[in-house]
Amino acid sequence: MNQSFPSKLLEHAVDAFATLPGIGRRTALRLVLHMLKQEEEHVDSFAKALTDLRKNVKHCKICHNICDTDTCEICADELRDKSTICVVQSIQDVMAIENTQQYQGVYHVLGGIISPIDGIGPSDLNISSLVERVKEGNIKEIILALSPTTEGETTNFFISRKLQPYNVRISTIARGVSVGEELVYTDEITLGRSIINRIEFKTKEL
Amino acid sequence: MNQSFPSKLLEHAVDAFATLPGIGRRTALRLVLHMLKQEEEHVDSFAKALTDLRKNVKHCKICHNICDTDTCEICADELRDKSTICVVQSIQDVMAIENTQQYQGVYHVLGGIISPIDGIGPSDLNISSLVERVKEGNIKEIILALSPTTEGETTNFFISRKLQPYNVRISTIARGVSVGEELVYTDEITLGRSIINRIEFKTKEL
Image 1 (cartoon, each protein chain N blue to C red):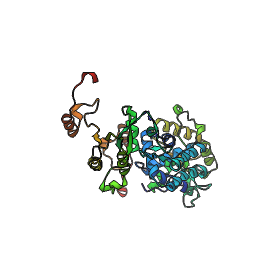
Image 2: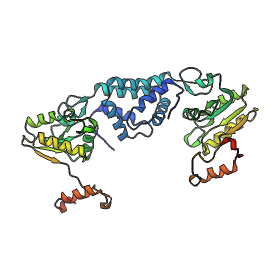
Image 3: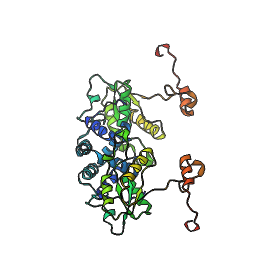
């Protein structure tokens, strides 16, 4: 869409929105024209929320999760089990696992996964700080909760090798048929794994 | 998605993005985390583009199109035919028609269409200023280019009645089968209209 904009100001705002992932120029125009209809204070507070975030947000010095203070709420929580670390790719993953309310340990945010195609190597990720945490002791288990892709498996392998010298249990989250999912719609690899990694049937769990 | 955010700053930015049309909280989070990875200057200029637009953008005093000066480029252009006014709903419509490079007249942006359900009446639209333009004379034709919906037809009817006292030709844009579209995939109403409003076959046009 090679559009001639009636206003340079409009064009600049559309250009800015179009830099966002998944937002094309047509959508950007729609969003900007929506903003234009809002009160000036609303637009100002929208802009301020963004600049404030970028300027003042911090990353937890322990687990690299996003936070407003030096240490994130999870690491600072005395009730969490500090001997279990769940290794995740991103902040979204922390939020997703927290939403399940099933995990009482702490996290370690890698900030990505090893992906040679995208030029992301182990040194670009928060791996050495994870090794440091384990080296300091008192860690009993590392749960690798990365995506079940080639990149995820590579990263799992790299981390597990780095942690081999230390006396720590390493596990990965279970792969299997989704709860509520029909067997016939499950992909073959997942279904195959769910048979290999079958678990003992306990009436209690039902 | 009832999420607990690890940071208030993050939550505020996500809340801001989620006010945009078609952007849910999950998408908002993805966009905000993308912004967070950008340089601080990039985020600042993004925010500035928005606030600058809201603060400084103007609407053409003749046609209500968006512009940076008092009169838009189209109305100020001496080569455009000022005796033909194309009435459109929004600024996007002006841009869409301009992109066709088939129209040499000027525009009048209503800023919406009559829609009792949404509480939009004739007085909420730029209709009286259109009547003023016609009243001042020198207007030969009004082209109604609104959406072919009930609301669009209602607005067409209202405007045409308002313009009845003046000696001006009123037309609407042609409805018909899209160029390149297969007949079988055209909806019945459009196909029906395309037969009723058939035009003389000219070999020259091919």
